[in-house]
Amino acid sequence: MSAPRTARARVRAQLTSEIADVARTHLATGGAAALSLRAVARELRMASSAVYRYFPSRDDLLTTLIVDAYDALGEAAEQAEAGVARTDLRGRLHAACAAARDWALAHPHEYALLYGSPVPGYAAPEATIGPAGRVGTVIVGIVRDGLASGALTPLPGSVDTIDSRVLAEFDLTDDTVRAARLVGAWSGLFGAIGFELHGHTHNIVTDHVAWFRAVVDTHADALALP
Image 1 (cartoon, helix red, strand yellow):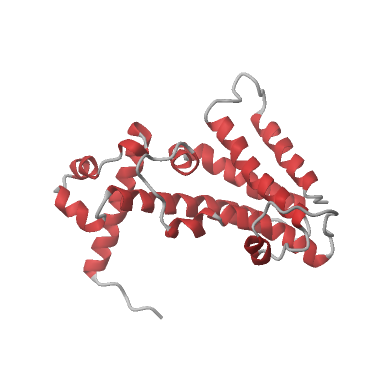
Image 2 (cartoon, rainbow, N blue to C red; image 1 turned 30 degrees about the vertical axis):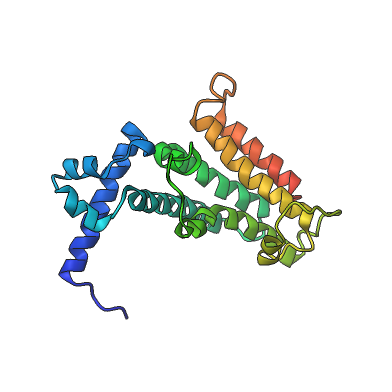
């Protein structure tokens, strides 16, 4: 059992959360590039020096927002996928992808922070890598379960466009064609969401729910999910 947090630790956690919450509202009004610790401090009626004790730089605050957003997006996809029968591989993919889309539509500015234009001068640290891969890991897990159960068999042929370390990590060394198509599904998922969110499909697509479901089905077909 972990030790109870001290009063100081609880206050620090609360203030850290409040700073991040205010920063998220600033994303909606000025975008990530304009995020300012001083502006956040003014809104919280805190001295700038006090905010810097929690976030030493704007980049530290951005990293927290990015990790939190990736984790929230990943958790939404994971929970939705977990609610579908393990044998329903296509249903699991649809559930994860639909949850990712729903989260993006509900949190457009956070989604833009993750998949929009890069923030000038910001380099994402290693701490963002794990959270960034959570949705992709869900999709890979669906395929791995299918291969393990015999519901899927390796696709014929081979490709050399995927890093061998990634193939080994996800047990796809003997199914490189499907591994490449998994990358296509992952990038296609976020591409479709981004196009909708940023208005590129408006006045073109009349039913985005049905259109998105068809996009997911296209990737499910490419992965040969039953």
